Length: 188
Image (cartoon, rainbow, N blue to C red; front, side, top):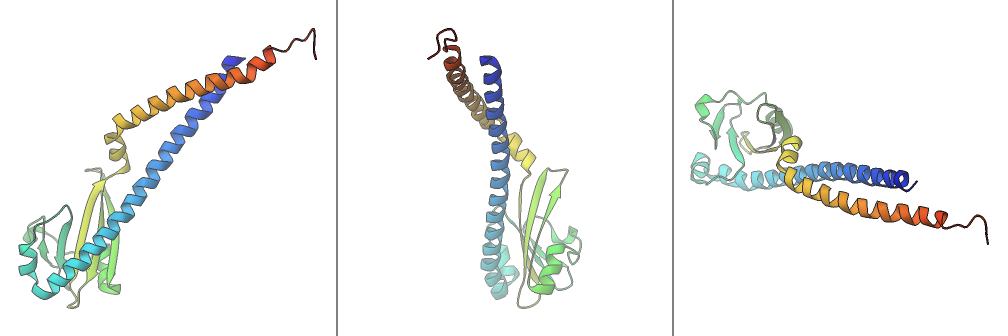
């Protein structure tokens, strides 16, 4: 009887722990995604002032962070890119975030690369002269994030399993022992 109660308590505790861990990872992934979008927006606002004042001169003098910067002309031609040679880049007028920026002033989109297992988030804003400044950030997918976190997750799971085992054993004994201690021949 103790074993059955123990297995039930431990099973429920482990399931709740595992589902909680998955839920927390999902929430944190979305939370940090929103933070990155805000950072892209702030960087675009900051860079737009320099681009509007000095254009390519300003962009060529910058030292670049992890974010990719692309400046796109009114016809979709790439004028500047911090990562690639502009002569090798195709017209960007059909990109979702660029179309939105042309239409409403700002645009945002995310695209996932199965090949790289990465997700790139783009933020674009139309400048006063009609050109578009686009900032992008590439981050790991949920799957690659989880695989990179395997050692700490395993440690947390093992520690949680040990704690769950101890509590399940104690709780199952506290439920069963009073029942076993009942003297059926001399109740009262």
